[in-house]
Length: 353
Image (cartoon, rainbow, N blue to C red; front, top):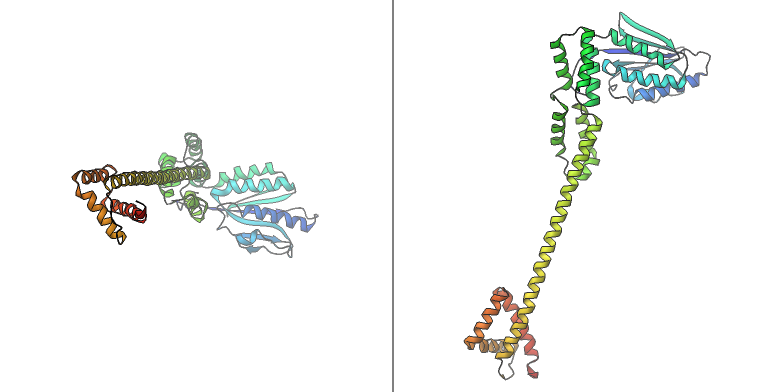
């Protein structure tokens, strides 16, 4: 439905059962079933509904009440207003209802004070007469808008085939080219093509940042926007699936990136551990090569100081120590920590050396 605030005339439509010999409760149930079907149709939210009660005057009810008639008061008919653009849809709904009951029914169309059409029938196919007569009595602009909006609501734009059909309507209704161009522009609203609607709706969908947004109240808002701009439900669902696919691809890329970063960090850790282990062996070998018998040191600190003094005393050993640290890319704090641990262990074993 294109929300362009076009002024549409309303058609009064009344339906009354002519089967006075039938069980009143059955007739009531049939009218109730018709109400349930009609009130579900889009575009009738502002319509006024009346029900005909047996042997009583019509009673006005709200749209929310029309689908829940009470059996405490039996009804024989229904009357309501139809926006001209919804005439065909409502008539199809009523025809389906009549086809299911196949009972004599009186139909009346109130086009204007000067034009009231009545039809008595039990055959759904006869309602086609109401359609042709009713549309023939509508103002030319209203009839053109009704058919143009039907095409836009179905296809999202005026397709070449739709324009060809509307051209016939234009000639039949005696409309000028300028009138038709103005009506087409009003029907399409701010968007000239279905492609422009796609672009706009795609931008609107960017507000959906995760998959759950497309199954929440946010999607209901997006559906309302699609309806307002005349984007068919099938196209809105297609663009929803497109956005959902994009979100899933993005989520998969982020997952793969996190896994890659975690794997890179794990590899860096393993390489660091290997360097530490290799340096440990190199340092132990260096200490053992440079070690000379020592009296037992009174504590571990003095033991470490004595060993490091022996390593630093000879330029050759000092060079080997610096070279080993550089080769295994150890920072001074990292090397000091590992060397301290090795020398503390060696101190505990010093009595055995």
